Amino acid sequence: MSALAYTVGNLFFPTQQALQQHVSKLLHRHIPPYRLGHDDGCFMMELLERHPSAETKIGCGVRAIWIKRNGKFGNGFYVERTDGTWEDFSYKQCLRPFTHASKCKFAFRRAIDPQVNAVKQSVFYRDGLVLPCPITNEPMTWETAHVDHIPPHTFAALLTTFLDLSRLTFDDIALIEPLNGIGKLLPPTIEAQWVVWHGAHARLRVISADANLRLVR
Image (cartoon, rainbow, N blue to C red; front, top):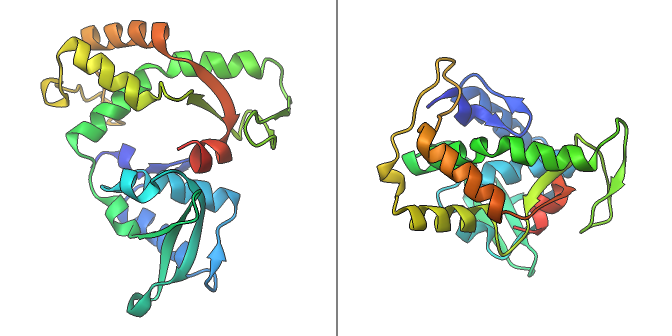
């Protein structure tokens, strides 16, 4: 696994063991049932997105992440969905090495970072601004805000369409490993085409991290 696999939110873990120990301590820090607070909830939500069955686990969207008793296994993490249903998930499955497809998706995301940052900077044009989230109305700052693709033109939908139009699959993309070992890079021609296409079709908005990680997904 590259170092990229051990970066979750704003936290960096030098080894898989360090990340696993961090999550294990979080799991056993509270007496269940316990609803995770904002920071821990967002951290676990981002980790959940690395689960091999993330789409099934997340379903219609996540209202909260809980720690509950999980039968003979002791404490476990649970998803409370926005429709009131529940689903448990194993955090250890979220720590598995990234597949080639997962690395490709990250490379496509990183290629559009300048576009994402430009949108965020256009909203937080002055230091110290505190603005209401357009979805939850909670206050958000530069540090707590995320840039989101407005549905139905989500990042996943845009990427799928781009690949289809380009007649590409992830297997066709030979990623480039940069010298610093952090992450993967797209081949220059594919990246240039994607950046232009994304800029023409994406509709981006700034919302709170809570809204992005818990609600709109």
